[in-house]
Length: 259
Ligand SMILES: Nc1nc2c(ncn2[C@@H]2O[C@H](COP(=O)(O)OP(=O)(O)O)[C@@H](O)[C@H]2O)c(=O)[nH]1
Ligand SMILES: [Mg+2]
Image 1: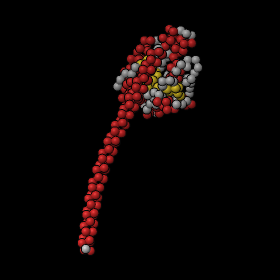
Image 2 (image 1 turned 60 degrees about the vertical axis):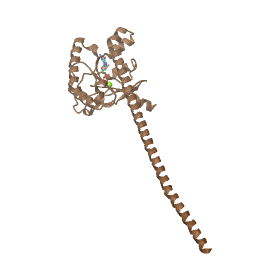
Image 3 (image 1 turned 135 degrees about the vertical axis):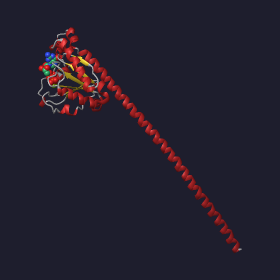
Image 4 (image 1 turned 90 degrees about the vertical axis):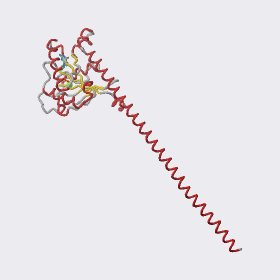
């Protein structure tokens, strides 16, 4: 079980405190009513929390602190997940600590950065769509500058989704934008699994090749050994024959002397 869990792709939520990460993670993991990931948590007391589903693991983090330039997450930028969901509340563009975090994250993910980073604009029901569109464009630019590409950007409202589900109002659920985000995450999870399967297949192929090479080398040294043993026995047999001839000759000479 532990092994199977370890194999599952991890989706991790990063972003400033209060961005709406935990609330969103609850919606994504179907904890619409019951709060699985604690919201409004005080950063100092919170550790990463995880929820394991059939396909992947959701990991919630305490969040970056906009006032803390030495933020440890922003400092190393190493992600604890395969897929990073970067959550930003669109009150304005990305703040310095967010930009720095993304820069280091991009560097640490390397070739996987462009396929495995997703930006989420949260709490969209709190702003007019025009303003969100402006902010989205600006964030796209900021990402392009620090990452070298613009990741997919999703606009969501966990609150609209929660209301829609609880009151059974499809229009609210649709307006929440959660479904397209879930669909995208499922696709990326499937891709991560495919990449891992391909890597595992290549590793097995490599091992099989090594085994074959080792077998060939063993066969060669066995043949070599056989040849050497045969040649040594050849010399030995010759020597025995010589000895026999010598003994026969000696016996004959002895008989002659006696006779
Ligand atoms: N209006 C609104 N508030 C939200 C939404 N999502 C989260 N919140 C609220 O924003 C606050 C911080 O959310 P939380 O998930 O704890 O943020 P975190 O620090 O990033 O994990 C809480 O009071 C949430 O109820 C949303 O979609 N709309
Ligand atoms: Mg939280």
